Length: 207
Length: 208
Ligand SMILES: [Zn+2]
Ligand SMILES: [Zn+2]
Image 1 (tube, protein in one colour):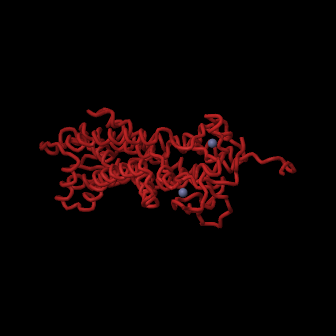
Image 2: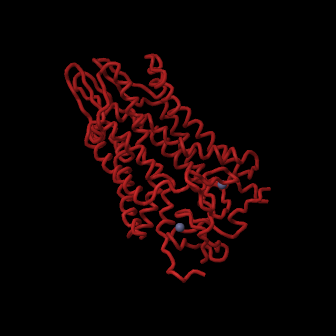
Image 3: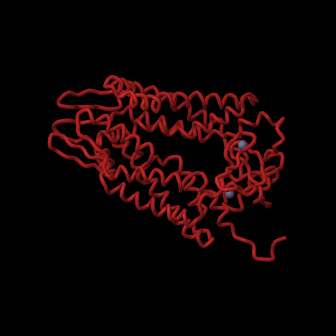
């Protein structure tokens, strides 16, 4: 289909560690190491699809407590209350900080959901060796690699706010267990995206 | 084993290309998946090392100076990054202090240290002792270093608290902003071109 040669056609393999292009002797020897950096040479990331699925599903399951459980406890001037991620967004919106509400909504709700869908889509179409919209899928993968970690924003906000507000008797802000779940969800989705091998997207094009 | 230093393989789709020199500001793009293959060199090893040292200084300022100043009914509270991390460590969910401190204090520090180490040797065209593990660590750390996320987090925190307290960013905040820019300049994806820069040259006349 495409005249640009791929590594397997030229019998070469690029080192995942340092990028050096080496002769592909994996068929004969089974395992080979990069002569420059010593990393094991591999054509694809090992168990890419299975690992990415496992991490993605774990993230999806933990996303439920991350949203349902409170992420922060706030006590100001004697009034105390717990808030979840969504109620935090609503509070910002009500108080008139629309931009901040939007930023947190995008970072904590839109980006993780988009990530679940994107990784799921990449994985299923790679398994079916689909040849549809390959360029677009490659772009999607690079997008989630680029923006995925911004979901950590809420963890940073809770951490900073609760570390800063320490006026003993008057006010207190404490993190709650939900933020821990949320942080783990973000880490798992990042690991899932890293486990997925973007080269798989193009493997349906080989024949 | 044969190696081909004149070839480059797109790490997103396995397309193979022959390397060619680029003009300043140019980038080579993959014709199959449109990923960036490599960029023209923006600065040499000396500049790179100078930027790394600048990053080290900004890092120290960001850690020593208060990032935020809070006032409330005559009380004042200046908080540095270390205060924030240690306050978290004493709180009810101690464990979230660990990733927080890791992603904004420990990892940038490790990145700057490792880069300075390999660059000092790279100036002499040599590979530092422990070059391969250092390069592997730099690649592995990059996605987890989150100075920019923390910076936006501080801004959100300022807005959130400004409804009932006097809050202002301190010198540490501006140092962090500088650190964010410097880290993206020095520890980006292009780090692995250090492998090419420190490639031992064959002795003169030995080329075929
Ligand atoms: Zn290598
Ligand atoms: Zn490509």
